[in-house]
Image (cartoon, rainbow, N blue to C red; front, top):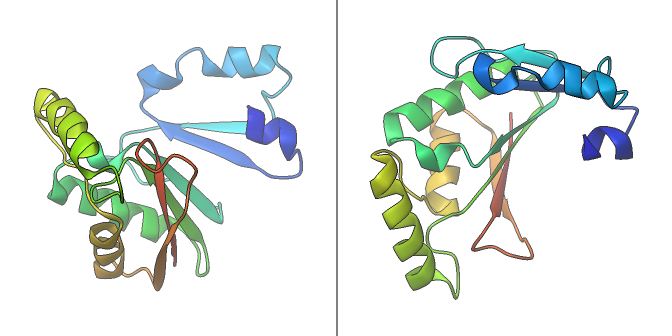
Length: 155
């Protein structure tokens, strides 16, 4: 909603599980955003990602999944993006400078409780992105890297 309000010229789509999106359209409509944000109900593992967008974000997604599932998500994202399209990955990452012990302890416990996934370093994510065919990938500095680090890949 904030992105749409700040940049009314861009088209926004949200791809998420049907249950997660339930009620979202009526909320966006009541906020005057119903026609500006397209909802795409689906599942990362059984549905194609929506196409027609030149940028895609994965916010706190990959670290919740084991390597094979994460690679599947990255392949699907690459297939949906046009040449030159960008994928933004924003999530806590392993090997965050000055935060390794705290981050590894917290996210290790969190992911152990989830029973899947693992925090990956920016370098690991870049290698995975290259493996699925992204042309470039780079880490972007953030103000609070323990909470959210960013890797941007170009198709």
